[in-house]
View: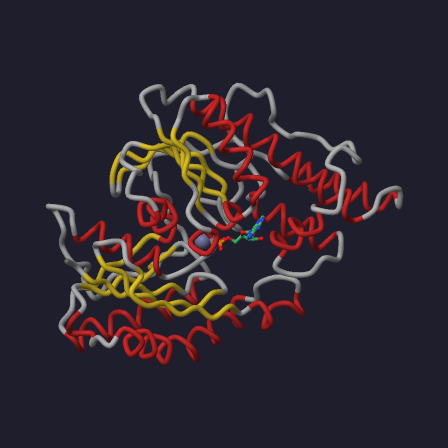
Length: 346
Ligand code: KG4
Ligand code: ZN
């Protein structure tokens, strides 16, 4: 039985967790910085890094004491080493290095996206490799084939905004507050998804890539027209987003014939309408569908600890060196061809 301490600090959640190889989340704590960033309508990197620096060490102490274990009893310390806001990533990684050195415990530098990608396996022991993964968060929107730990092939990415970003921008336009995804989902419950005609960018395109910038502009125009209420716009936006996702996945899945499992991960996977649409799509493709519980979809340290457990179990496992760097960009599939029109997102 292995026990791993996980540390997450790549965006605006400070988190620590202890997870064991029996898929038990032995202890976890998470501090959201929503209130710190809300006045600015988005995450301010400097504020995020300072908050991580203040909160992380006491939080790790708290998680260890909740579980009644010492660092020496952990088989490894796994910390997000990228991609993300570099100041925050450095706080988490340097903390992990210091703890690893002081307790003579192996350090494992985790790719945050790998944390999301493997999180369905923490939640559900049925999920075996290979599986198709829709990774939808605030910074990423990708379809990947996961063949094993560290083995990712990207089939699609966004040429502009990520899906979570589109939810956040829609929330901002509609004055629903920050963070936007849950606010849009809530508002949409009172609205008619057919009320506002909105585009479905990329739908019908032969390549499975995403684009959401045009959808966001159409939301802005619908709002500025004064013809529609916020709930109808939110519901229509959410439906358009879901239609884009299912159409794009349909194309990607047709290129993964031997894969019989579809999983969704990342913050947007917490959205019930998205989950329901994916479940139907998986049924249509005769695939097993799995989505982690919403708390494991948004950023957390349990998924980072679990990625550490998965790495530890590999026959080729070696701890990461103490001079390993924090990485603002770190694609899961470094060999993926750049997509025309794609911005900075990995
Ligand atoms: O994975 P995550 O916590 O952080 C990143 O790695 O980006 O994802 C955050 C993103 C945000 O854009 C947030 O608005 C979105 O996930 N999100 C949602 C929901 N909960 C979080 N989007 C739609 N519906 C939700 N319920
Ligand atoms: Zn994330």
